[in-house]
Length: 309
Image (tube, rainbow, N blue to C red; front, top):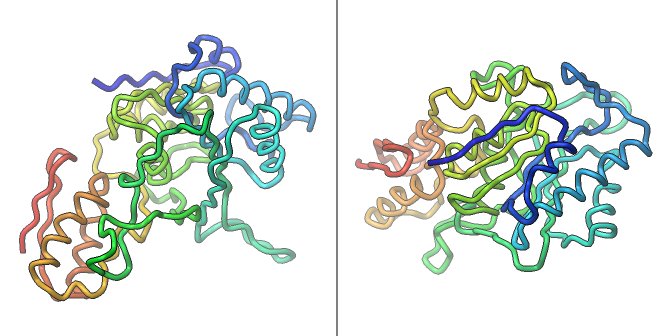
């Protein structure tokens, strides 16, 4: 049974209770030092104090990671380069990827370009790390029998919508991240039964995703109100993650042969939409528009599917 543990307190203190090399994956969205209000604390330190804080928690993160472990860190533009330097030059971790999360709505500016992305640094503790490519592939744009129809590598530019305030899964937290974004990280860099850590748990997205993907997870959170909010979120029924890469819903062109198309469509649900029951209507509409097929799809217990036309 999946174990989910949300702990209230200072991350630097709580880290001390985590054993060396016991964590398979770290996913976290630490304070960007932009002065945001997190209820019982404000995200604003002097430069030197913020960098000392960053070095301290990253050193702890490296200590608790297994040799095959990976860390994903969200960071704003002001400190992303400093974070990179700490991870690579000071902690001697191995650079994996610099992921750009592209979103379609953001802050507007009249002087300078309006920001439409966040950065995510991906580092490994060693050169021997977990990466499950087949679990995160995206549908091909065109069907070709010689291609790997399990799908393509999603690349390092990810498009996911923000969790808008009208979304029923929106929590009362200023920096809530989309579940689909976290889903890709968990699937890529861990296996079922692994232990995931989020030292700045916030709205509880990492724990919620791990809950659905059969991973164990620990979250640290300074604000007790966010701890209570996370506990309530984990008790909610699940009907699909709150966001999805829009490419997951697309149906490849050139699937003209009915037998090949039917087999592919059945696989499509299993490969790309297993945790996105709320995206099935869009998928069915795409099939209808492209090939004229009416398909009925039902995900059963989040582990099986039924498809028939």
